[in-house]
Length: 277
Image (cartoon, rainbow, N blue to C red):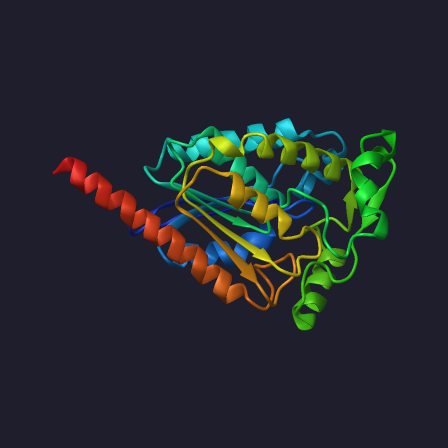
């Protein structure tokens, strides 16, 4: 069963398109409510499984960060051939891919919403030896060890956490462990993106939790402090963990993302009208 989804308006002209990228070991399922919200507010939505995820979990051991980049670039090119305005948003690994798209297509991306950007694996729930993870996974060990999915599953809200926990272990919406090969490729992607931040100059909204259990606020701060964009905003959440689209402040996150996208959509239209006039 495919977990990819597209939400396309048939009866009205959409405001534009939004390309969504999910997180490491996740699937587009985690973007469904977010995507539906943005669709209900006038945008066509596209979300596909990143290579090595969804029905192809076993491929996580063979895919590289270059595969992820090519996937993201191809998806953006396809949408840009159909829409004048294309926004990109992602969670976790998806946020890093969104940044990579912004770096490569800086003249064409309308704006980016980066959620729980994961440039570093330094969250509070990782084991005490987390500082050694980059060293360990750079060896052959990465092919033989998986870090098990465990409490709190990125969610502070206990009721929601129970629901998500059941979905994780009873369906194929996400993996039940973090393959070290995935961590390895994520860190390589992170290095690639960090080395190109100074070329990033498009509008961006960063949302990150102060209590993110997978990646600390350092990730968002590194992006915010090193990009060229003058049009940038960083929001720090106080009552959520990593999975901000499902936690206590999800409605706030949804609305801030929409406000950002709508605002920049209007700016683009106004600029186009001035040119035409």
